[in-house]
Length: 235
Ligand code: A5P
Image 1 (cartoon, rainbow, N blue to C red):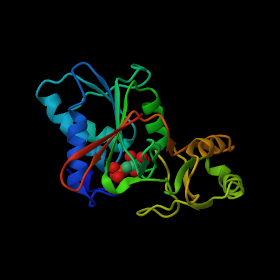
Image 2: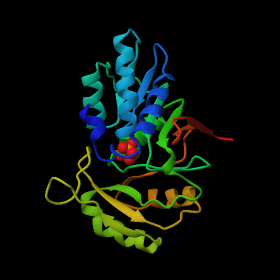
Image 3: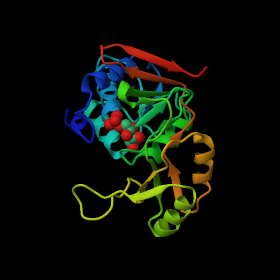
Image 4: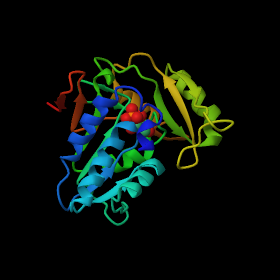
């Protein structure tokens, strides 16, 4: 399907596919499922679509226009947090993961809605390929920001030691506009030794709608280069 050939779909496709399909097996009849965004979760959505066609009774809650469109294509019935505020399981990809299950997300500019769905879930499972697992997080942190707060946010994150870059669109003139109508600033902080503290400081920054550091992850399914799956769990 076209959705899996998107932003990062060409790298480690087999590993993404294996974890995506394994994640779909975690979903049981009657569950409300958070449908994450990106090329890895797309494999889980497609596998769930197959299961739905075979009779699995689920309701999906999408985290972006991308996952909504794919879920509709795959025949997954959808609902919303307004109708189903408790999500049984949320499945989503990530840009980087450490061994303590801190995660950076937002490479697809969907992290605000992803975080809302993940925080509404009883179980949050992240799906990555092996290259995304690191000892210390060092990936730039995406911030979804109100457009009129751009200069203010840049000033504050520089004071916090970051190097902010406004994310520009690839096939549109000007900046990326999120599904919520906002800008995204990617902030390079180098090595992030204390993701919780940094996350709290970013949440305090006026004009930041949401940052891409997540710490409510229950398990990470890692697709390994030998075709296996390693499962990282909170100790
Ligand atoms: C969307 O904004 C992101 O959080 C994605 O979930 C993350 O970038 C992982 O994407 P891939 O699975 O495409 O690598």
